[in-house]
Amino acid sequence: MRKFILALAMLGFAAAPGAAQSIGGNYTVAGTNFDGSAYGGEATITLTSETTCTIHWETGGSSSDGICMRNDNAFSAGYVMGKEIGLVVYKVEEDGSLHGLWTIAGKEGSGTEVLTPK
Image 1 (tube, rainbow, N blue to C red):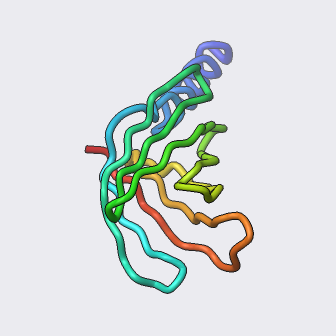
Image 2 (cartoon, rainbow, N blue to C red):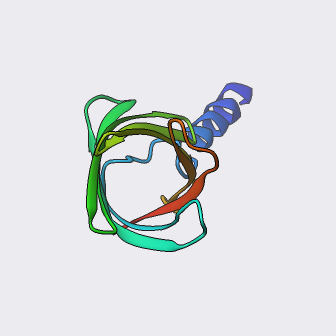
């Protein structure tokens, strides 16, 4: 009986929200720049393995591309926008949205960004 209860508990843990949720797909982007001004757009995440991916943003009239990686509820991406290199770190929420902070190399401060699945 103990083994059966333990097996059910482990099954429940594995099926917890976000545990096996795929991160790939199309997202609506809502963010703030370093100065607090808002921007919006779209992003597409394409899986390249169980933990790695590519990401493409179309925001505020510009586009950028990057590589990304997920580790449990942490999701990060390094990207290039024009000649600038950036980094964004998100938390994967139970509803599938990604809430993060981003920055650009050599600049002070950070912006915010939320990706919401379409």
